[in-house]
Amino acid sequence: MALMTIRTFATTLLATAAFTLSLPGAHAEEQGPINRAWNDTRSTTTNAWDKTKQGTAKTWDHTKEGSEKAWNKTKNGTSEAWDKTKQGTAKTWDRTKEGSEKAWDKTKNGTSEAWDKTKEGTNHAWNKTKNGTEEAADSTKNWSKRTGKKIGNWGKEAGQDISNTFSGNSK
Image 1 (cartoon, rainbow, N blue to C red):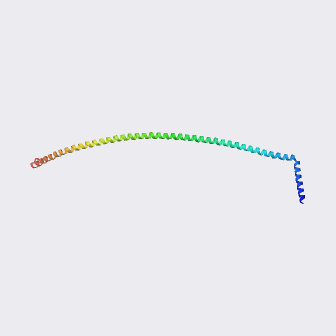
Image 2 (cartoon, rainbow, N blue to C red):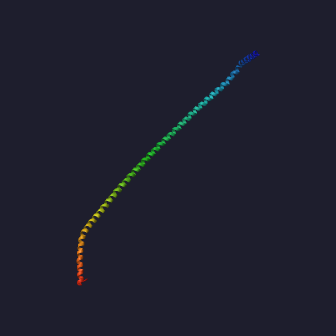
Image 3 (cartoon, rainbow, N blue to C red):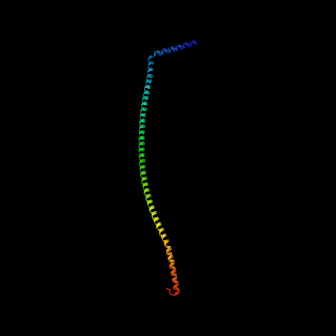
């Protein structure tokens, strides 16, 4: 049995080989479509890769251009904002400086005027005090003389009145 199995196996193998060799055209035709399919796949893949590369390059260019434009706008906007801030600060400082100078001038003038008025008022008050004091001193000095005269005159008048009362010369 084993011998028969080996003979059957060998015959089948031989028949298969003979059949394969008898069909060289069919074998060549099978290689053509596979080669064509492979070539088509390779070509399609290459085209797809080229398109992907081109699309990526275009996208990168657009991104780069957009980034540059955005950066330029940001840079320009920042420069403009800084210039406006710098100018506004300078204007504000000038106004503050001018206002401070005006306020200082008014304060200085007001202080000078107030000092002049105070000085004049003080001089005027001092003169009145000095004159009043001198007048009071003169008045006090003369008061004793006047008082003495009045007392003397009063005594004389009182004596005259008494004399007249007793003599009957009353008025």
